[in-house]
Image (cartoon, rainbow, N blue to C red; front, side, top):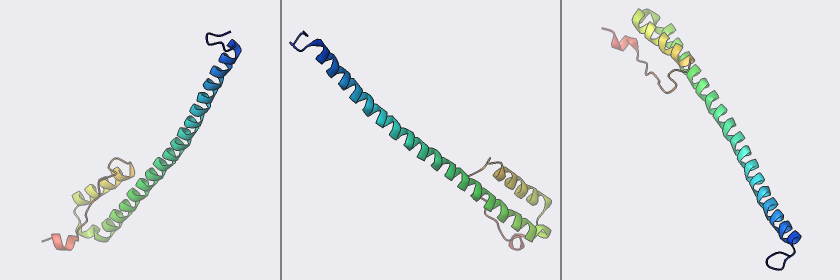
Length: 108
């Protein structure tokens, strides 16, 4: 007999059931966290793909600008724009975007 008059095997079984119940709760929580982690990982990949797409789109615009105005741009300006494109494609400056001007208006 146990201390309270309950047979030892019943007390042990009650404790085991409580432990098993808690284990099952933790298992469900862990599974939920794994699913959440999978969703978060997928979202991170989506955002990275979108960054890449935005960077490529800006590079395309800058290259189009250089092609359109190459005769009016100095070699230094072209070099700066190409360097920016290279850094964009390498992911070095994801959050930096250029504002392009009409070189006809800035030339004297």
